[in-house]
Image 1 (tube, helix red, strand yellow):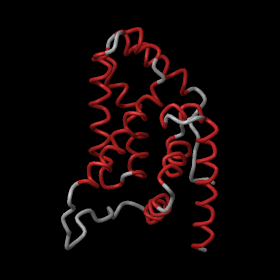
Image 2 (tube, rainbow, N blue to C red; image 1 turned 45 degrees about the vertical axis):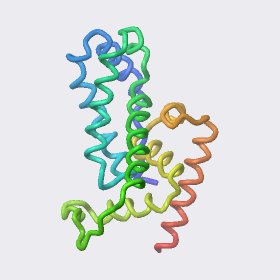
Image 3 (tube, one colour; image 1 turned 180 degrees about the vertical axis):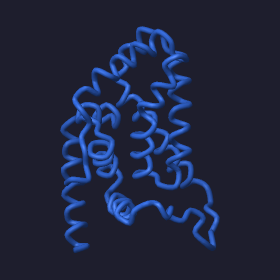
Image 4 (tube, rainbow, N blue to C red; image 1 turned 90 degrees about the vertical axis):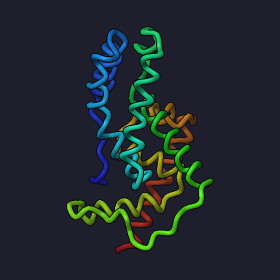
Length: 184
C-alpha cells in the first residue's frame, strides 16, 4: 500500500539523542521534542479522533512536559520517546471518548466541522475507512502505518504484547483491503 510509509531507521538514534538533551535541560530541549513529534501525533490522533485531534495533541504535549519536569534526569535519558508520547496521547484519547460518552450530547442542526476545502477527497475517504475498523485495529494500523511506530514501540504504547499488536495490524490491514475492494 503506497499510502503507508515507514519511518527511517535512524529515528531511534535521533530520539535517543533527544532524550539525552531533555535529561540535561527539559526547558531547553522541549521545543525540539514538540517539533519532532507534533506532526506524527496530530496525524495519528486525527485518524483516531478527527474532531478532537488538535485539542488532544496540545494536551498530550502539556502532559508530556509536566511529566518530564517531574522525572529525574536518569529516567528521562532512558525513555523511548516515541512510544512514551503515544502512550500519553492514546490515554488522553481513550479518556476523552469515555468522558464524552458519559455526558449528554447536544443535537446539532448543522455540521459545525465541515471538511476543509484543501483536504483531498482521498484523505476523507481514508478517514472513513479507518473509522470502519474496530478501535483496537484502527489504533494499531494508524500507529504502525501512518505514524510509523515499530511493533515493539506499538506494543509499549498500547500496553499489549508484540504478537497481539501484530495480529491487530494484520487484521486491520485485511479489513482495509476488504473495504477498498467493496468500494471498487
